[in-house]
Image (tube, rainbow, N blue to C red; front, side, top):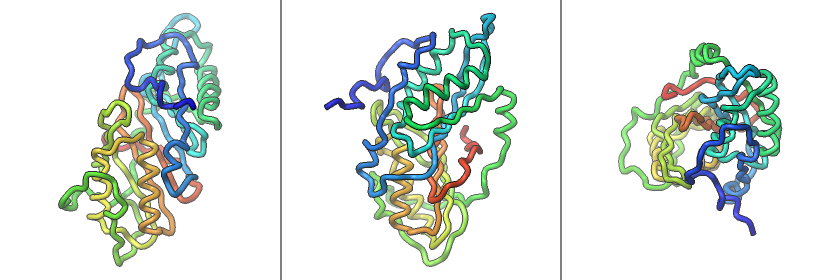
Length: 271
């Protein structure tokens, strides 16, 4: 039986391809991680930002843009990050008639690999800078609370339900996990929108920090966090949004929600 994780580009040394090659993209079935979770289906999306996207105009002039890709989390596959980087770099010496045509190519190729329609927007750098000025939602910062005896592995048993109600957003900039292939650290800010009986703030912080040595992909970490919070807290409604620090010009920002809602576009301060 073929193991889809056995030939990943992640962790391998490989020369960058500078001419268009959609065959560089590699899918990873979402079921590989979800089969270990009590919840198998989610609402939300993975929001990718490509800060290093370039191609050639028909006259050979280099052009640049910042790309935003929204992959619904009900897609059959997530896209392996390094293969995504190789694919985007394959446009570096490729002539494309227009930005509109480039967007059509990206939508077609990414949708084929993900197994669902992928949304693509291409921003001029100045336009994207203005977009970054949008404010993040008001939130309760968990990082100010004391932390005693940090846990060494994620465990929903760390979470405690409080007596009071909480209708708002928690935030922490202390989320860290490790790549399951390379072992490299992945840093993120995380926001948790919540309505219902509150979780104790100190216990929520301790739970999030427990991912510090955990090895998994960004999308899987967020889905596990979502599942654990839902199981312990039984909220009336909830969403979880993590924005990871970009690596190699590409970031992955998973968003999961208890109901259909607009995917957030605001950016974390660390970005």
